[in-house]
Length: 324
Image (cartoon, rainbow, N blue to C red):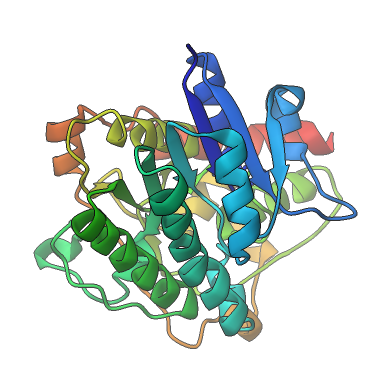
């Protein structure tokens, strides 16, 4: 009998990579998606798997539609990837962010508890929950105290603690993956990594002469989404549920990213193409995020396979090809 998996947020970057990963493992995959007039399945189309997914429409902030999705899919595994995941936008839509990223997971936990208590659940937590709190060497691990610096981070902290509480109170198999930044060629254009690689490709093709950015000195621990979804799956294959930091353990600045992206496009003196725009500065910046993935390596046997350099090269090449 095939295992059944329910993925919320299946039309996003992680949802598409995870769906492809699970289909390759012969899962029956159900995707929970919003019913929109112009719903895009471009990320699923990227892998050619759209017709292989059983789409269940609903709203992550509506208990009844979540109940319907759980009853319909009868899942062995649930991956909650649905979120308003762009940190910058969370400042403009804090209430919506709290509802989707905070209350949404709670509705899902309630549905699993009531209708599918044997299902294993993965909750997508985030490094943004740490904010400006780091240990020595600027590194964050599973024991680092959360100090979020955005509505997005705050909502995710609530969801994280809710998941832990349901695990401990109702004996649910529920895990939180505290993922640091993870990117790919299908990352949304609003995210700085893809904004840069797409912008570089446009400059390469003569379609633009600038990229407008905010803080160039922020440092992030960037990995490849394709590697990180495997860690999500690994967490649900363990005998005991737990929470794990998923990261590379290395950091790079926006300037480092720009240097590599322009280099791979064979464009020199990239400074002349960059305009710093105050509107892209966050009210409360998180200057440095660096994860310690030791626990995931020891317990899960997980390590990132894709280097930062290979990730940036992959993204630049695909954007140049796409626009060409």
